[in-house]
Amino acid sequence: AYAIRRHREEPWTLPLFIQSKMLTPLSAGLISFLVDGARTMLIAGTRSAGKTSLLGAILIELSRNNRIITSEDTLELPVDQLRHLGYDILSMKTRSVITGAEAEVPADQAIRTALRLGDSALILGEVRSIEARALYEAMRVGALAKLVAGTIHGDSPYSVYDRVVNDLGVPKTSFKASDIILIANTITSPSGMERWRRLTQISEVRKFWTEDPLLEKGFADLMKYDARADQISATDVLTEGESEILKAIGGRVKEWAGNWDAIWQNIELRAKVKQAIVDVANKTKNMDLLEAPFVVKANDEFHKICALVAKEVGSTDAKRVFAEWDGWLKSEVKKQPK
Image (cartoon, rainbow, N blue to C red; front, side, top):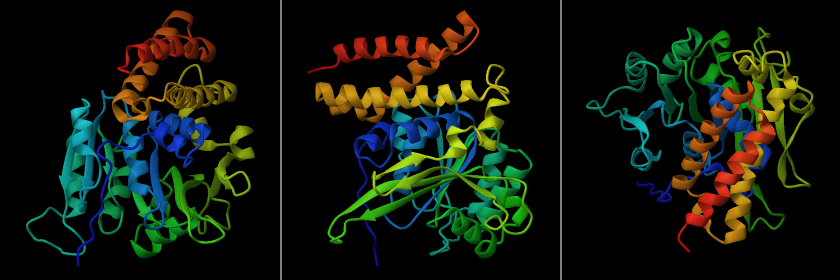
């Protein structure tokens, strides 16, 4: 039997997902912050929930000065498109757990090879077999200093834990190396005739539990889907600054250490930037602004302006950064072909 998937010619982006209502600007800003914070992420969901598409959009959030290594048994990530956009990206085709082709490299060996290639972001198309142990071993010893992300089947943080620990044999203590679990699922209309993809949960994995993360509050929701509003919304854990992962990211940045307000302002700033791209695309009816080539350019400019403002005033002043970036956006839009 053959399964044929038709992918977009260009990668998905966070602004495209905001436009399609899979994400909200705040969830996009939070994801952007986590990517720059070099966290470990698992994107879970049912079949056709948009896991791989979301993973591709997350790759667009990486700065182009990072090296990216992808490992897949079925090539689905937009590697060629990213390379065309100037990314330093290496793709490894691994042995399928279904066909078991002997001529291909086993997934766990591919991960260990990736670790020898130096400081790189490691992206797994899907965590489903023996590579899970090698991945978590590397994560536990701190061998990966950049973003680590992959997809996995599961419809809740606990189902991801169950899959990783009970099905794939990763020790419970090793599972704590996971930082963030994103859940993408399909929402069905009352008639059952329509379906929409939505990001339904962003949870962090806390580290101080021993046996069962569900009973010992090992998962903390940062954002959760609100069916009435048909969107993912922030929880008190996020808005009240109770996230251990976000504080850990802030603890490595001088101006954010011990300053939750500064961390929150930066997340909101990123959300505002993503929303601005969507707004100007709709206003000008130029949907190319939502595509990867422009979004990569906008992300590069955002990072440049953040660095310049921090150098000039000693901090990443959110109002000033947005004002300067918004000025760049308006100027860049005028250059776009009509």
